[in-house]
Length: 323
Image (cartoon, rainbow, N blue to C red):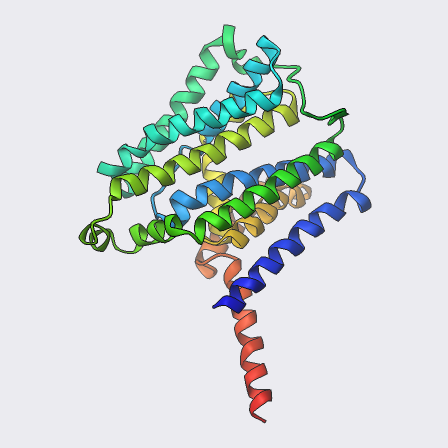
C-alpha cells in the first residue's frame, strides 16, 4: 500500500513537472490560456473531491461557489482598489461561509434531492449575477479586473500567471493529500462507506459533512478568484449549471476520490473539447459519446488504468522473481 501511494505521489510530481515544461515548447498564447484554465480546474476539483469523491455527497453547486469567489475578488479589487491578495482571502472566507450554509441541507437530504438543492443554489447565484446589473454588470460583465503581482513582478502575461497558479496548485495538491491522509480524510471515507457505523462510534456526522462541504466551497471560491484575475473579465454567462456538471465530469473521468485522478481528469477534460474542435458541428456529440464511454467502460476513471498497469507489472515482477 505504501509503495502504491509513493508511486502515485511520483506521478503527481511528474505531471506538475510536465506542465511546467509545456510553455517552454509551446509558447503560444492560446495554449497558455488553456493551461491556465486547466490548472484552475484542477484546484477546484481538488476541493470537490472532498465532498463528492470522499464523502459521497453529490454537489452540483460548484458553479455558484466559483461565481461568488470570482465576483467577490473582482468587485473588491476593481471598486475599492484592494490588492488581489486581500480580495482572494475575502473570496476564500466567502467560500467558508457558503460551505457552512450548503452543508446543512446535506444533513437531511441525499442523492438526487441534494443534487437538486445544490443545483438550485447555483442557478440562483447566476440569476442574481445576471439581474444585479449595477453591481455585477449582468451579461455584459465586469472588465479590467487587475492581475496579481508578486513583489515587484507583475503577472502581466499569461505565461507568468500560469507559473504563479501552478505553484498555487502544487500547494493546494499537497494540502489535499495532507487532509485526505489525515483523520478528516478517514472520516470522510467512512461517511461514504457506512454512515450508521460512524454514528455507532459516537462521531458527529453533522460536523463531518459540513466540514467536507466547507473545504469544497473554499477551494471552489479560491479557484473562482484565480479565474477572475486571470481572465480580467467575468460575466454571469460564464457560470451556468453546465460548469457544475463539467466539474463532476472531470471528477468522474479522472477517478472519483483519487487526487492523481483529479489531475488526470482536469487535463483530459480541459484538453478534449479543444482537440475535437476540428469536428465542427459534431464536436459536442463526439465529446458526450466519449464521456459516456468513459462512464461505461471505466467507471472508476482513467486512474483505474494506472492500477491495472501497475498490477500487471507487479505480477510479472513476482513471476520473474520466482523463476
